[in-house]
Length: 452
Image 1: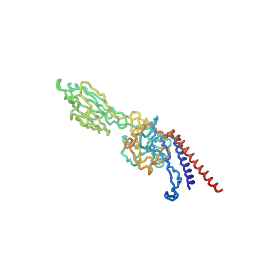
Image 2: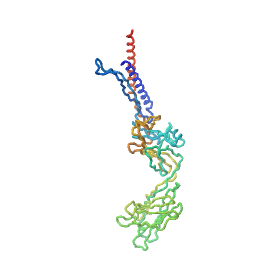
Image 3: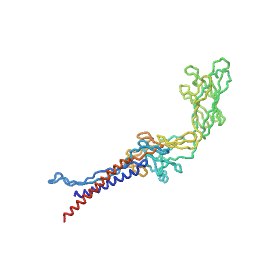
Image 4: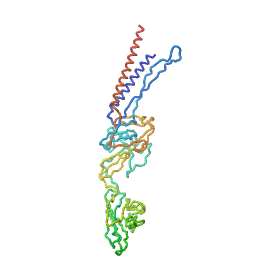
């Protein structure tokens, strides 16, 4: 009977608009929740077979009300605006991709099997144990760097390489020296003087493997002429002494070119060892790269001197002045932890009091084929589901993913004006469905009165 289906349709309309109002209330309540993804209701019509035929004599199809069904949806792939903050570990994703997280409680219960969750933003702080967690107990996951600050190769379709990000707030770190660029000029006039000639000395500071500052003393002695008026030799003796041990690292001869096109450059094959280093010290000169490689009891340091084959030039022999301006060295002595920063590629770098930074972790960005198929969890987090498809971990900025932004949080995708408009429309639809039920009730009452 059509009148009874009208009642059912009205009731389904009340339920549907009640569900719609629930999502509107949730959206408005979370309008200031960072990372909240707006929810909505998808309405779908329902049909009921009439059992009639349009070809029947004296009749046709009967109109029966089927009503409406609803399905809740979350606009997970929508992006809220980013808001700057004053905390370096407030993190947001600019573009596609999500941050991998897990529950701290779940990690403590089973640290060998991570319960992966995803989010697009989070305000992380270090807890008492140094883990980066949110106020709701979600801990950030990342790929841990090795001692040199490099990120090992990782499988991208599994969470096996991920671990909770943990920062040692009381750490002390150092960066041993690996390269010294020996920029300097030796006075050409010295090699035209009668031997012996006063030497010139450079002091090169380096950082050893224990983080202590040490010195190398480099002495240049011109190989002067035997008699005044003889052609200048353009040759120098270079001795390197490690002040840490007092040992001579190497004893070399260098000859410079005096041809117009290449005047002042080191000649091919001119750097030769006169006497080997003491103890475990060994030095090797590569004329193609211009690098002198020293092995100081296991610490390898390269000294850039100058190439004899068109490569980089460091040392020169020109004019009548000695100069050591521009000498540069890498490494940093031991320093205490100062704080962390997160760059756009997801690298978490700790800074230290002596002015250097060290990579601790890299935060990958997780992606799935169907973001809308993710399961919705509490605290603006999501989980992989059959509908979302499989997980893939990208380096930020690669593939379809965006970048990682520190000092930023993603705002809610709720627009208050839109929600208020939807509320008015829902209220009117609800009232109209209630009116349908009231009208059906009055019509049924009229039918009952016919029996009297």
